[in-house]
Length: 443
Image 1 (cartoon, rainbow, N blue to C red):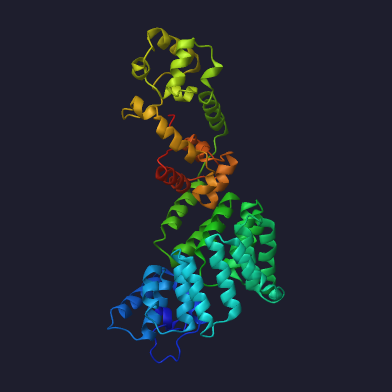
Image 2: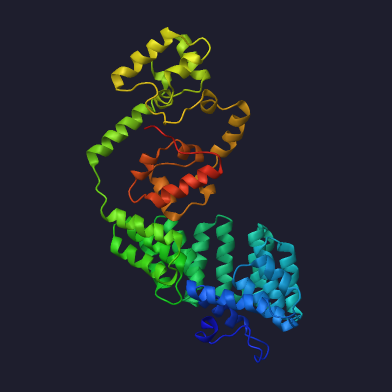
């Protein structure tokens, strides 16, 4: 088996006294996830051990840990509960319970691990992580405060403190503690990753690149770091370096869908031609379409009808057909001529932005209940969508802060932003679709 032979750790070795240590298990997990082929081999090996006759307590422990490494957390919980009592059982059971959102049970099992010789300091840090993920910041802070005397010697103390501060929104303090973590443990990959990510979000791209490079210079492959580094390189126009990062991911994970799409985006960026005059025309057109109807002198009847139909801008108006306007109560031929006279000088006409499929008045005008429901969603920040780094940065450039701002953008507007490609567009469309929303369609 590759994953146990090459890294010299065999989780299922019957002759191993006491089995692999927790440090060895962590190394095994990193090795397994460093390549798709290793992950598949390890998965097959775990399945083979699951199919064996009823296991001893030690066998259940090995399979349970294997399932945990494969991120099959619910199965890991069930299997580990059958294992012989030992510190590894309770610690990995706690870790699996944490991943399934059972935080109280996770804390209980961490406490039990102390009865079987688990390291008190490590258990404290794991408890702090559980409390932090559960949103119980006070309890997490209390756990760490009990270990403040390790301030000058423990990298993990500063890392867990930084994670807590970041969860609380204390970003500057978190950055300071990530840096202290690296002073004590220069190769602490999780601290490097979170520090790089925080620098990227704050606009310090050069520092972010430096930290990501430190991660990617070591083995095994850190996929998330390579993808984020590729985004930063592409933003700087260094497409060859971006491609190299993606190639490293695909070398170990040839079926990684995000990397495959990202590779196509980078190749497209290399040949992208920016037509400044075309972009100016597009901007002017968008500005025209966003002009409020209230800016124009219309009759009271026309203005009231449009308002009741939720037609507030010229863009809304050109999405509406003559038939739909005339079908509305009290909207007649006189009002229709008035609207046409308004649109003609601007090169616009009714129905020009409609898709081939028929759009009904009911689809254009939401009910009161729908408006109330949608308003709660659209007022939320785009940060709630948990988009990729690239998508978030592009939205910041476009001054998009809420989901409502985003839903009022067109595909063309988003794709017109530098380095915003099809991958990011599809990501945003998918997120909006999950909320029952979509981007505006003007053309």
